[in-house]
Length: 328
Ligand code: PEP
Ligand code: MG
Picture 1 (cartoon, rainbow, N blue to C red):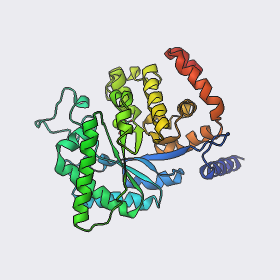
Picture 2: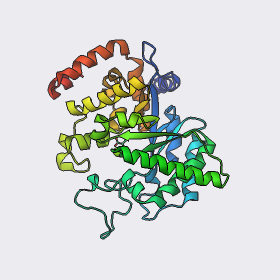
Picture 3: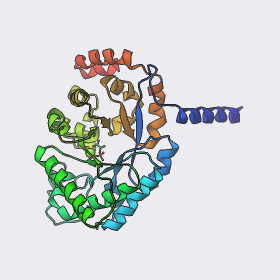
């Protein structure tokens, strides 16, 4: 009997994997995988991911201490794109510094030790190290001839950072053109919304970029002033804080008005308890750890957006964490 039950579970899971990801009222919801290494691709496919929504490229090299050259990076990106066999792959440029320090044992250097999360990290570091950035951009662009790649930029806050980033991509493209190297001329460039300023002033992102991805892990950290690596304040780290929900809702609503796609790639996207809330807020693209995909899909299949949206609107007006949690 146990064996039969296990078989039944397995076949249910298989059916879930191939089922179209849409709500009862026919709203399509895209479920993507977050990956850290090319070796994560098979799991993403096994779980039915429609693509890679966040490839945290810095993990390839985090524990080495040195920077990989262009060829090594190119091969890693190509491996992921080929592995995903035509499904879109969103590669995030290096999100180094703070919780992802390239060389955590370095005692000297110009890294700010007191507040690394507020320091020279992610795109700030990339713009400050143009050679490192060009190497990565060239490697990603070269890999784009093997399949659909999108470029995702972490930790943007300022319009001039976006403009400088776009200029850096243009520079990498023009050097490749000079070498007659093939790449996707129309590669899409998107920005992460993970600083409250970015969510509030999202218009300047929408005018410059092709897509957005909300990084709630950092967005919560910066909105609530909670160091995400500090155990002592972990209990205060609350995705349901009304301020966090307001920032997400504002980002989604603003992007929808101008037809710019938005995904959410923080841990919230993979929490089945949050699926209905996020659907009701208008989120249609979720990117998460592969192990969460089918659980979230199960929720999507049982949801009805027409019914959720007005309830969520009411819920967001509650504005009280206790009441919000209850309503959830
Ligand atoms: C985030 O900040 O939500 C995110 C997806 O990126 P990371 O966790 O790598 O900072
Ligand atoms: Mg982040």
